Image (tube, rainbow, N blue to C red; front, side, top):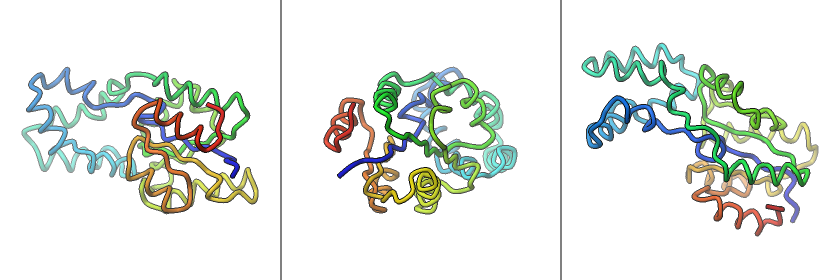
Length: 207
């Protein structure tokens, strides 16, 4: 078996993103902050924006539902960049070892089309991918198989004849990795750099 391309998720693999970075500044009490991020600005809501819903629409709907938390809700996207801690050195190292070996690298990310340009401009490593599927652009989100089909279509355009079993997908979300595996890819659930690199080595990759 020969792996012909590796697809990276970004948040949690290459880019350090966490709402905690912002909301620790805004909500000092751990329990209150946890409640807010679990019940108000929860991931189900974030995924709607990642899937193409305008940030303004999603924000106004949430403010209407939780008017007592308006300032905190508006801060989510007004101060979104404060949730970015930078690049993750381990993921970047894996990327660069694969890149140095000539492995074609692609990106598949759940990310709002409105906020992605901020990261695109600042993190040159993203521009080194051969192609990227951004959920907010295609209005599909992982783990929907349709977004993987879109990624495969783009990979196949550059690597004619490539098969699903010749692709690796790395994601810090287990459901997304499992979705790739269900389509015949090698889905790798990224829990640590050591574990991911070990799995890639098992697949014959030079990391």
